[in-house]
Structures are given as C-alpha cells and as structure tokens.
Image 1 (tube, one colour):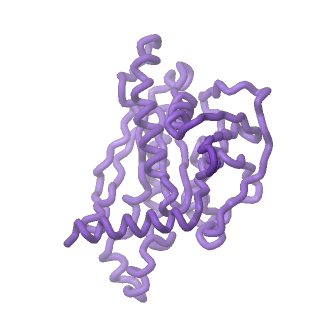
Image 2 (tube, rainbow, N blue to C red; image 1 turned 90 degrees about the vertical axis):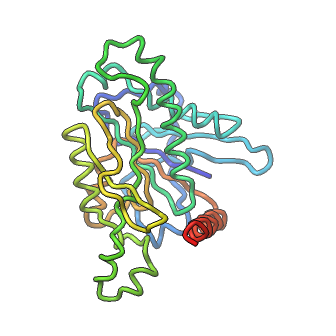
Image 3 (cartoon, rainbow, N blue to C red; image 1 turned 135 degrees about the vertical axis):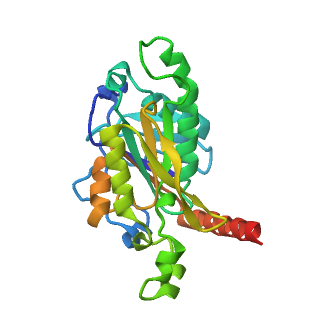
Length: 274
C-alpha cells in the first residue's frame, strides 16, 4: 500500500519534520483512477507515503509538507500509524482559536484501507492527546481531539436513485461519483471550517441508506480526517471540496487486492441482511 500526502495550507498548524530531510517526487497513480478522478496537474504530491516490500515487509512513509517531502520509515504498519498520529498532534498555536481545525482529505480506491488508516491514526492521536494536553493551557479537554468523517454518509438515498431516469443503472452503479451528494458534503465541510462543529450523516450498510445527523464533529475535535473515494476529484463541487483540506492523502494499493477486499465486504453485508 502506498499513500501520497500533500499539505496545502499552514493555517496555524506546524509540522515538526526537519526541512533538511525533504524529497521531491511525482505520484505514480494506480490504473483505477483514470476512470474515477483526475488529480490536478498542478497538485504536487509525494510518492509514496506507505510503500511495503514483499520480501522483508519494510514500510517507508513519505509525507509532503507544501511542495517538499520528509521521509519517515518504520518496520511495521503500527509504527507508521504512530508516526502519522504524532505528526497530526495539535500544537498550542492551533488550539488558540476555539474554532480552529486541521482537516485531512484521505482518498483512494474502494478497498484501499482508507477507513482503517483514518480510524487507526485518530485512535492513536486521541491516545496521545492527554499527555500533550496536560502541558497546555487549553479549553480542549482530552481525549477526543480527533475525529473521522466518512464520505459514505453522503450517498444518495435509494429513493433518490429510484427517481433517476434509469433507476436500474443507478442502483447497479451505486458508488460512482454521481450517486453521492457532494453539495451536502461541501456544505458540511464549510460549516465545520467556519463554525468549528457540524452534524453529518453516517451510512447504514444493513439498510443501505444514510442516517441523518448521526456523527457529531465538535469544537474540541481539532483534527478531522475526511475519508472517501472521490475527495480529490477535480470536477464540479468535488473540486471545491478538495480545496478545503489542509492536507491531502492518497492511498495507492494493488488493484487485485483492493477488489478482493471489496468482494469480501459485499459478501459480509449480504450475509448480515439474510
């Protein structure tokens, strides 16, 4: 698995990586993205954040701050999660504004492991936060300093697919960009950025529909990882969504492995529905 990471702004957020360890590279995008989205040619991101050798399972992480790329290495994926969590640990400067947010956009193909990466990094970040908070004079109370905002909740309802010109095709292709509600996602992200908190929908895989206002991102959540397939799309409202993120992470994964994971996921959901 490989992840490209790009930092787009500095909004009261500092990175502890030394500038002397920077590396410039171009991303090598997976085959699938030709069909799902086209990243901006001007967006220089790193290659790769996670790369794993099949022989010794050595994991290398490359993180990109603005146009340059510090390298972080680890012997296992847990070490990488820990490193990414430490990277996102909010600083005293970021906490000076009660509405401040560091928003990460995590994209990749279905089955790439976006949810796993997001939740593992957030879990570790929330575990690290009490130690950091004890040394800060802050209104933020540990441990919930980070949260995950999944894009799944922004699927169109089945009833909305039924109302389309070709309902059969709409249901068969559910999961394509046009079967989501990017306008609602954009509205929620703008609210989060401007007001510091927002209610967003989750997705009930058993029922097959979103659950309104099921996830609450509060003022105390200073780091928010938004994860979804199309967050780096350059079309329509997706382009504006992409511009909101302080950092953009992209997971590149073997497509056969990703398809196998998606197949197993669908089998699991189908078995729960029976």
